[in-house]
Length: 608
Image 1 (cartoon, rainbow, N blue to C red):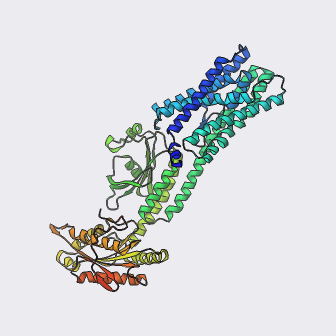
Image 2 (cartoon, rainbow, N blue to C red):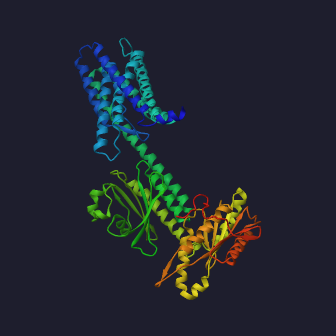
Image 3 (cartoon, helix red, strand yellow):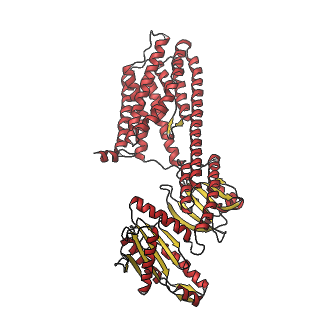
């Protein structure tokens, strides 16, 4: 029952659309019934003045709507309509409010459909929300009129003000109770609904009750002109509330930006692995503009050829890498940013591209907003980070300033990561160096013993490598080392560690990997290397490798040094068995592995 209810508690669900239509049509039917059955006395000239002012206010307050708590848009006009209800009658006031909301909803939907880059709304939801927005104030007004009434004949000022305040408060509570149910049906939480409506919206509306009471009392004692004078004051208060709300949202956005910048500074300063660093920067950059679905791109100038940029593109939905590619630098917006060493903000890319002589081939005109910031360290350009979205005017100067701050922190972190990489990675193979391996095997051994998880170690040696070097030369040997390194890391997991242990010897640390799975990994690597053909100086040759495997707890080593020794002994046994094979250490006796090519390495280490 609960999963079924959860299925229907979402936007555009049958329950959501049905509720909008049911309440909306009920309100409009009630309005037509009241207009047809009630007898309305002719309006005096003064009441015509009030009616005309009310219609004008209904229009202007729709123009002065503002956001409260992100996407909740309001105009604080309830107290004004309530004063009109006491002067002309609640049904007339409800009709003005209903038609104002009805046409305002249609206008905003049309604007969104034809003039905005936001996703068009479903027609069933559009029509239901339009009818709903107009029907709700009618239901609330009729109910409150039946409870409190609007007759103030014979009442003194204090009682008029009290009755008006009670009427308006009950109207707001009923109106937003009905609206709250719609939000709950579309999937919002009870806490979220309470925060959005009763703390945000109703709070603003209740603050206007004294001015609404003043409108009513001003009309009672001074007539229509005093009412109209206070109407101007009411509109000014509405405008000031809008400015206050806008500043409040802006302040919260800036506070969020500062929090994001603080977090990103703390996190990226501790990241020395380039892939982890890029992922963190992508996450926080997208959080910076989380209200605008944006694509994040991280580009680094190629280490060997600075005319190329190596890009990493992230998905805005899950923050995961969606693609990696390389582009020649020149004739595009990133080139403008990198060459000028300055940020570039475009709010309407298709129209602004001509100002930078960007060709159609070099710009993706699906995106309207584009923000690129260079990664600068000591005036050296390391790369670029980019945000882009299909919405127009999505980014502003504040976004660019915050993004530039992230870029400065990122550039320093990139430089540190490169220095760390130089210290921990072998220049030829791009694998980890022996010192890093020694530290990691110690750490992984401790983690394995502490968490009672398996740990496997592979030791690999390229067969007959010295003879190969003697026959083909050291340059050919270097190519073999590089190619072998590329082959061995293919299909391994991100937490596996591969190091260049010696000249032609490699070591593999496989955390959370039992012996049988490690045997499968070793077997696949042996076959992969043997199948590879390497070209050099007009020659085509192949090379083979031997691998020794040891694991804990299966081999029961007493410490990580003994685990290394076991793997090394198994490697020696593979060499003795004729090379181009793998052997596993079992109870001090090296034996051939089982048929392990089909065994998966923790489900993710298979052949690519």
